[in-house]
Length: 65
Image (cartoon, rainbow, N blue to C red):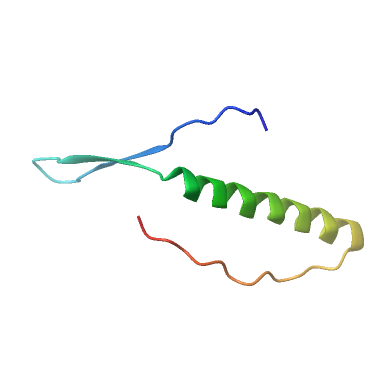
Protein backbone atom coordinates (compact mmCIF):
# COMPACT_ATOMS: atom_id res chain seq x y z
CA UNK A 1 0.00 0.00 0.00
CA UNK A 2 1.23 3.46 -0.83
CA UNK A 3 -1.29 5.39 1.21
CA UNK A 4 -2.16 7.38 -1.90
CA UNK A 5 -5.80 7.28 -2.94
CA UNK A 6 -6.30 7.71 -6.66
CA UNK A 7 -9.54 8.42 -8.42
CA UNK A 8 -10.45 5.79 -11.00
CA UNK A 9 -12.37 6.51 -14.18
CA UNK A 10 -13.74 4.41 -17.01
CA UNK A 11 -13.92 6.03 -20.42
CA UNK A 12 -16.45 4.48 -22.79
CA UNK A 13 -16.50 5.33 -26.50
CA UNK A 14 -19.06 4.04 -28.98
CA UNK A 15 -17.76 1.97 -31.88
CA UNK A 16 -19.88 3.68 -34.52
CA UNK A 17 -20.35 7.28 -35.48
CA UNK A 18 -20.93 9.76 -33.95
CA UNK A 19 -18.55 8.04 -31.44
CA UNK A 20 -20.24 9.36 -28.34
CA UNK A 21 -18.11 9.25 -25.24
CA UNK A 22 -18.94 8.93 -21.54
CA UNK A 23 -16.71 9.11 -18.49
CA UNK A 24 -17.65 7.23 -15.32
CA UNK A 25 -15.99 7.72 -11.96
CA UNK A 26 -15.74 4.58 -9.82
CA UNK A 27 -17.26 5.02 -6.36
CA UNK A 28 -14.48 5.06 -3.70
CA UNK A 29 -16.51 2.64 -1.54
CA UNK A 30 -16.48 0.16 -4.42
CA UNK A 31 -12.70 0.57 -4.72
CA UNK A 32 -12.37 -0.14 -0.99
CA UNK A 33 -14.44 -3.29 -1.40
CA UNK A 34 -12.32 -4.39 -4.36
CA UNK A 35 -9.13 -3.78 -2.40
CA UNK A 36 -10.37 -5.77 0.60
CA UNK A 37 -11.53 -8.62 -1.64
CA UNK A 38 -8.18 -8.69 -3.43
CA UNK A 39 -6.22 -8.65 -0.16
CA UNK A 40 -8.26 -11.59 1.16
CA UNK A 41 -7.70 -13.48 -2.09
CA UNK A 42 -3.94 -12.95 -1.77
CA UNK A 43 -3.99 -14.28 1.81
CA UNK A 44 -6.05 -17.29 0.66
CA UNK A 45 -3.63 -17.92 -2.21
CA UNK A 46 -0.67 -17.82 0.15
CA UNK A 47 -2.38 -20.32 2.45
CA UNK A 48 -3.19 -22.63 -0.47
CA UNK A 49 0.44 -22.56 -1.64
CA UNK A 50 1.70 -23.16 1.89
CA UNK A 51 -0.59 -26.11 2.65
CA UNK A 52 -1.08 -27.39 -0.93
CA UNK A 53 -4.81 -27.49 -0.16
CA UNK A 54 -6.70 -25.56 -2.80
CA UNK A 55 -10.07 -24.09 -1.88
CA UNK A 56 -12.87 -22.76 -3.99
CA UNK A 57 -14.09 -19.40 -2.76
CA UNK A 58 -17.76 -18.59 -2.90
CA UNK A 59 -18.75 -16.06 -5.51
CA UNK A 60 -18.87 -12.42 -4.53
CA UNK A 61 -21.72 -10.17 -5.48
CA UNK A 62 -21.07 -8.08 -8.55
CA UNK A 63 -22.32 -4.52 -8.45
CA UNK A 64 -23.35 -2.83 -11.64
CA UNK A 65 -22.26 0.73 -12.36
